[in-house]
Image (cartoon, rainbow, N blue to C red; front, side, top):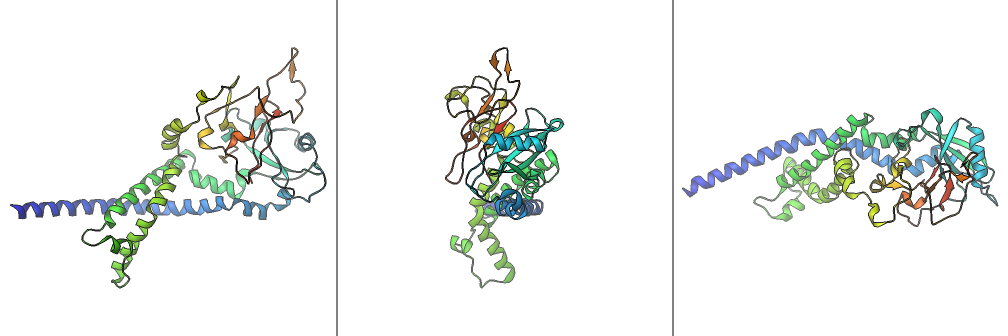
Length: 340
């Protein structure tokens, strides 16, 4: 009787092993090409600064001088060069040899309340002479292309769903691989450090399992953190739980916009947890006016609502990031920290 039970348990174990192996194989066939695409596009995104400096150095760098022009003077130069465009964002220079950046949107290209759909153009100004020295379309830079490929495979919501499915299958790939490579009759040492004296096929399989065990946790971290940016897992599950709540802080006096409006085109630069957080449109306890209110901003003896935006609202400050003070801006104007 015990012999029959042992044979049945071994058969069940072998059946489970073969089933897991099939899942592991087919998941790998689907996931491997997409992981290579995501890895390549991610490397391009990480190398954004040196790539853009090499390609757009004439617009990004300037010759340092003694004094800088005021932001109003730089804004006037941008409006003179683009009379039919609406300035929406200002990035101060990140160094003495760097230019100022203004983001402008054509009047007919602006979609109110949803920054992802804006056809923004980056205009670079010499802060010492208040002269426009170049323009760049952020969506057509290497970073813009890599970001679009990394998030949607250039297929919109369909591509986003494909990436999310591939990331989910990659999690299954890791879990099933850990099960298949676990030690069955040998010690853990032979799994984590397979001997090189084995036959070619056995050695290759052993190296595959060992590498999988060593990189399993970091790879799981990358996949799970990347899933937070997807539509279903991220938008409907993670973001709903991790969004900053205003209940612990004083609520602004008017909240018609969210931090998601600060994202430009395909570039998602606002931290995920802040995107759904309302943005104050009036009132501030910090900063002083940095831009003159536009003509017609007074109505019936009262100043029309202006937006106060703190650069720190775009993320957590680090030693390498420079921020600007809160400034009084046009209702459609916004300001973010310098990030290049």
